[in-house]
Image (cartoon, rainbow, N blue to C red; front, side):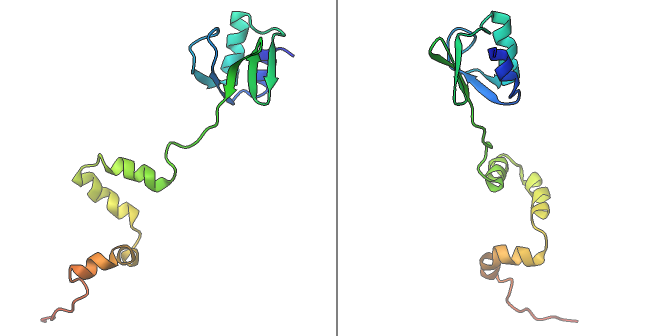
Length: 126
């Protein structure tokens, strides 16, 4: 099987180029793009070997499958990142979207509300 055929069997898989013959080292792109590249440059012959999910050319690793992960570990980390750059007005708009109801506000800020005297009874004058 030609290398381009093998790569085209997994077209969306991301590979990092770790060689120095086919292009820029550390370039990451899909297997489909690498299939086109090896055809264009004439490296589509039998001199390659697949070991696991990596590709070797004449005994040297040239394409390494890349594991994918989200940029942020969890949604709150993403939110923290964006809050750092928000203006006070943007935060005023955001907060009501984050908090569903009054009970949730109290659950989250119980201690701070108590310190501010929120739960202290005040006389009501009619």
